Length: 412
Ligand SMILES: CSC[C@@H](O)[C@@H](O)C(=O)COP(=O)(O)O
Image (tube, rainbow, N blue to C red; front, side, top):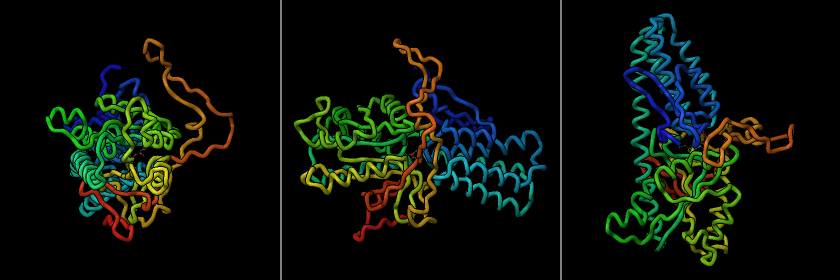
């Protein structure tokens, strides 16, 4: 595996060029593909060569920048109207409907176009410059906000474990991929895991020379069927960062939590109970209901079941955390019922895609393998909505947000 990298998006400001890491080929091959237009971005987002709510918004914004630059460079800007560019932006938003980040970014850019429209109805060089500045800021803000999310998540975890008087090693479970590959870098849910591991692990304690009351021992990424972002991308990131982890299938969650809670049944000689399940979000609406990768709702119900059920005997409470930047918050939508859930082609469920792997580790041609009866009925929603009642904390760049005494999140 050569040229390993966690940089999903490469934007060259001087040349105004955009390349994205083709995430369909990870973790086996590291290949960047150029995005030269809004149409290229539409296709790459729809095919999921780039995915993750913040990353698709950033790629969308940079693609609009690149396309507008093309008009200026080829001297056709004066012939392209603001209305034509707006139509292309509206088309881009339809590539994937659930994540609000892309439509938020496109709305912001359209607002810049409305301002331009007051002086001319044609795309101008200053149109390009204002879109460029916006997109670069979107990227840079996302990166710095991810680090703040990491710190805020760490704070919440320390406060929670301290108030529970918890001692010893603990584990965190996560789903999908919410790391550097899904963002401008560091990540949201996986960003918290990174920050926690950097500051609250045995290794960190040894480097610091200070003993810890509790420490992150292990991470359990769920495979995340049907697209396997957990198996392919999150393991790639955890491996890259040397964070100890064990991959599990989505249907092993309850069994794993139960086994780790039962001190007699250590998993691989480690007995570090799951204390936190941390997921990202594609859209968090006003009441806190959160859309995220299909399977997230299931994790939240399992966490809550273990918390309220005798199985846990009141010990090892599992907090369910949603981590996301404020660009993922949609205050215009009141409840999760109104969130449009993208449905993906059934073939993503009925077949597996990947390269042929030789026993010596050589990566061969891509292959599609059928794993279901041909021609059957398939339901393949890409996301589900976790009701706010099942979420303990929403970690943003501003604060870890907790529910008030009435059980409501105040996200405004
Ligand atoms: C920081 S990424 C947050 C979410 O976008 C992530 O959890 C997720 O659900 C991604 O889904 P995907 O279908 O891979 O785009």
